[in-house]
Image (cartoon, rainbow, N blue to C red; front, top):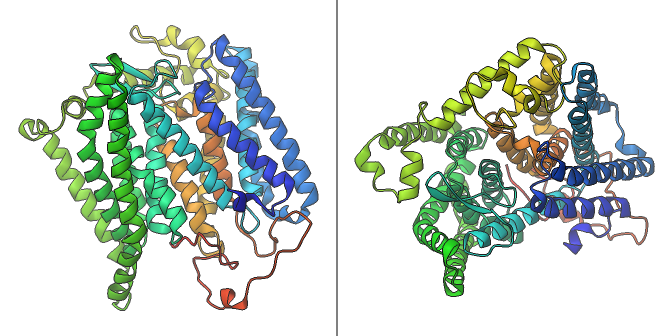
Length: 535
């Protein structure tokens, strides 16, 4: 950690420390949820102050490093239009106070976006953000698994719900925690096959099985479906050799996770009613041994597997469609798996909790029908507030007037639908245009940006959350939305050779030997960064 932060400008280091502290602490305050309740407002106000401090530090940082401001910065106008859309909605707001909160929440998101954009333009500025992401994953995942194994530091982090004990996490909502576990799984599994540095491979691979196990223990059906869709999408954007590695390591992680799942599941269920310290230690022993074995395979065997594939495959003339072989084959396997789930005899082979959850996945399932009802009622609200929306918290204030049957919910369970309800079609178009510009810039920077492989990590994280947010309200947690907008800022930025490394003025760092730059790699920054991610 010291090596990651040293030699950077004090303002850069200060922002990194503040971000680390926020993302570590925020989950334990219900993820700083915008829950439209009085007792949740204090963490919101603290987060708004935090965002203001970030903006002040960013302004001072840019004042000291004017070379970071380029002609491409007009793009940020779209980001600032997000809070403006809520300001416009004040004129027809169903709840003025909630709308003001939403304006500040968008300000918070834009602050994180700008930090991600400007603080990753110089060389050697991406690795600290990867470190923050992994550190947060370790703390959140290992703490929550400790709660599953019997500790009770956070009330209701494990809850008996719908016939099973489920992980609710410190966020107290299993579906959003499932979205986070999807994101952390794909980030860590990508780093496992992408980085050539053993330290980074060690830390990322060790977290793969805990993340996948945590996802299973949420018993989130929407999470399972989104996981499969994202897995196929990520395979499509990888080169052929990396697809092979990713597929092999993912299958290995799945097999090992399913192997320890029955034991961890039974121990966790018993511990909720009768805590035994011996069982607690046994659960950790099983989990840590499995993670260590996976880590050993990834650290010592994957590099050799990589060299073997390059020797065998690079000299052959693969056609342009070779990279689509594995994704298409995976789609066929998913289809066969979905068909298998309809077979009662095959699904009975699964452990009972998984059998109950997977066996009930269909369009007639209760939660699916509820969401369809929410979406229909939400569209009726949009019909009455089509252009500028009904302001922040509109659903919570109006849904009882529009509901087609009795239900109680504070959110329509869709980030995009809720945004349209609150800001109308104007706000929704601005949001979609903003996201489109971010992803288009990210794709266009693939060739010209030497830091692109690093930024792919943040693309995976943000895409996981945003896709899952189609069917849930993950972005109502400032902890989640802050991470997403930070990732979006990093994705839209670009490492520029014209921008020097951002260091504190002091003792000059010795120059690297010319042998480093004499072996150019089109996937690598020119400063030969030690993490060395390969695309």
